[in-house]
Length: 140
Image (cartoon, rainbow, N blue to C red; front, side):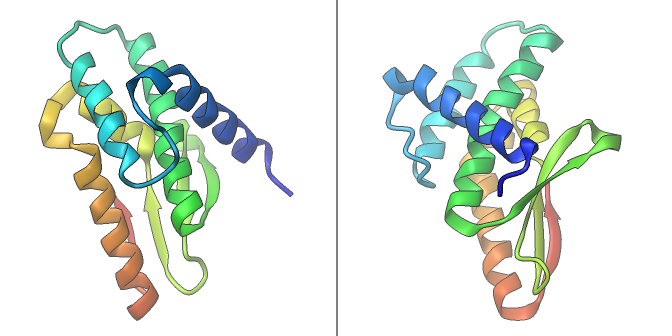
């Protein structure tokens, strides 16, 4: 049974995929993250207020979370201190966590240095290492 948090993230990710379908095929594949990154790159050109950044971070971050969960598994946990969810993949054998909302905020504010596909490649590498060695990490 899905938690309310998981339901909310799935619904938000689906809204993102539907709302931006004119920008690419958002099919929850790892490759679709390049199109998401292109959208975030466009946003870097504008002055955006904090409320808009929070909204974009929630939508795009939920899509990133769902790409990770649908391809590699995991469970969503709400982190009160950070006021956002984290996806934890692999427990109990290993534990790889990502905070996608923070990464989207960084991508909008910092530009290419916070490239989403590069970030996600780090997550994939950590999951593979975890499967083989029991590795535990948070990908930032």
